[in-house]
Figure (cartoon, rainbow, N blue to C red):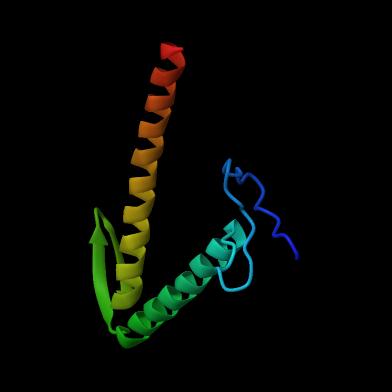
Length: 106
């Protein structure tokens, strides 16, 4: 009988056999979850590419005194990226605040 090696960082559960045998399922690992995430990201990327290719008409964008003419699909993509970066910036700042509070509490 072969034994499955647990993923790095995985803690064995006391009193429970952590090996999987035939018919009981597959051992879930971080690599497996990363592979699923990669496939989902690839599918989403293809969907975004299709959206951009279907929305190629030029639109004018004015920001303060600057003006650009961009395809509508690219403009929406850039808006989503800017929103995600802004959200990450706010979230990162909040995490730093919580770390400072936790460090003071020790």
